[in-house]
Length: 147
Image (cartoon, rainbow, N blue to C red; front, side):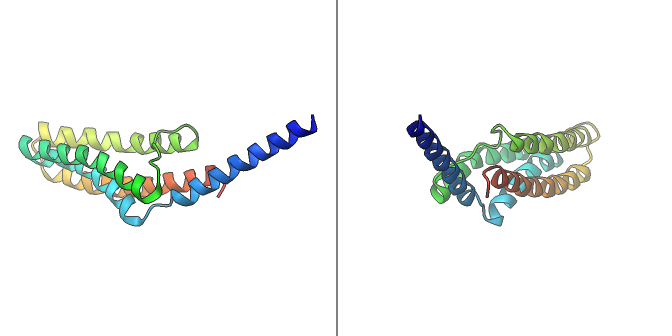
């Protein structure tokens, strides 16, 4: 019985150490948060442009995803999914809850009203929200890992 308790304590300590190591590795440089914000803002701002440019922006944003994944794995040794369970998922949903209406308004103004200024302004706001959201997500993740 005592040996089982020691094994369990050792396993829990190893888990805590692994979580602390993940938290330290997950600290991203400012450019990484800004890149996420740029991607979020670009999707919104794309509705200020004609279809071909809008599509090119979408292709660039989608192409950036595997590049970011590879960069994170190279820099940190891992890629952490933003929709992982826990408090970070609530942060991710919160970002989307704020971002999606901006996207919808940009679609309406850009495609229906042919207003090219509002999507650009909303894209700038999307950039700020995405960047701050990424920093907040990281802070919550590091906190969840016990660091």
